[in-house]
Image (cartoon, rainbow, N blue to C red; front, top):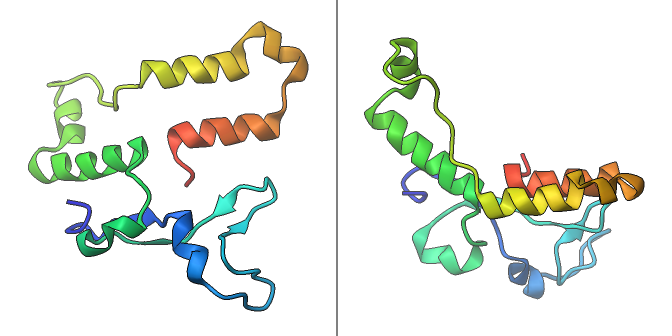
Length: 128
C-alpha cells in the first residue's frame, strides 16, 4: 500500500556506506544533527527497493491505515453525525510506560533535560 500511495520512508543508514565524501559531507554515513542523531534522506517507498528502507514505524502504519480507511469511510463525518464520539489511534502501552519512566517519574525531575526529552517524545509521535 505504501508503494501505491507514493509514501515517503526513511532510508537505512547502510545505504550511505558506498557514498563518497563531497564538500562538508564526510561520506560513508548519513549526516548528523546537533544531537548527534543521524539524519537520513526520505524517498518514495517502492517494493523493489524495500531493502534500502527502514522498517515501518508506528506513525507510518497509522498514516497509511488512516489514508486507506478515509478512502472507504469518513471518520470525521461519522463523528459529526454522532455515530462515533471521537477517533484516534490506540496507544502502545509499553511505549507509554517507557516514556513515563524516562520523563515523568518523580526521580527524573531533578535530572530533567528538555532536549533529550524532546527526542524521546519525537520517537513516539514521529519526527515530522
